[in-house]
Length: 323
Ligand SMILES: O=C(O)CCC(=O)C(=O)O
Image (cartoon, rainbow, N blue to C red):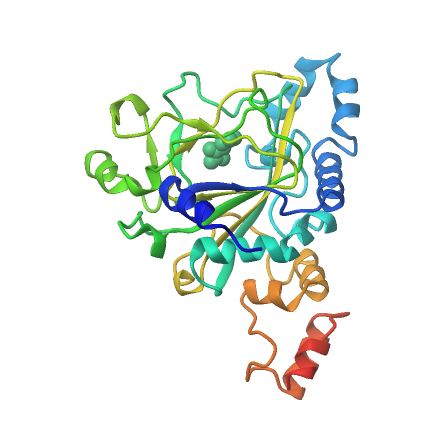
């Protein structure tokens, strides 16, 4: 998929971009169902509401006792970080159009995955917003980077994406972003400062240079991208009968890989989730995870035998053909 000049100009100006029709309906539907059953103790969202609308205090009590990070995947969230082990969710990463867009936004074909995470909020239990509309604004750069934002944002930021699994409308708590703020951090840092790679501002009204926040609404099948330097915040659901669910992947330029390491407790290289995903996925996705492409000198008949041993079931044909 080739982005238009207008889309690229919007990206550079705003630091965020929603690209429509990246994912076919069937992949979005199966990923949403897997994310719902993971979030709601085996139920769909409709079944969960049917069960818990009668007893909201109890479900809120259950959430209060859950680790806050786990709640990112929903009230009963089990799998959270990539690879989640939910096939339909993890394999969204194999979409070629999606990877093409990420490459264009990072201005390189050499991109790497920094992190991936289910992100689900739902009206019955959601508390992930601030009390006042000027609070809660921050950047997400510190999730994967130790280094504070650099004035040359295009070279040194990373990108966060949300794969939109159902329509996100104005009453469904769309994220609020300050367009263009990815380019305004040098002045904001000057008067505020940040910590490591991150930055949170206590009161948005103190920063007159920031544009009015805009809600990121999007259709199912879109991919929403934003710069790790973009200032944004959560807002409450105007309609509490809704949920908002996406799968998010973060990408950085390969030449920033030295410092783009996630702070999140991701399943390790030896986990069944990782081994199974890598065995099944495409050479391009393995490359985004750091493997050399087929044809690289790393691959010899001996090294391929070792890979076959380490990743049972892997199809090494593309690597063998390029020997
Ligand atoms: O829910 C949202 O839209 C915003 C979430 C957010 O700001 C974050 O997790 O960094």
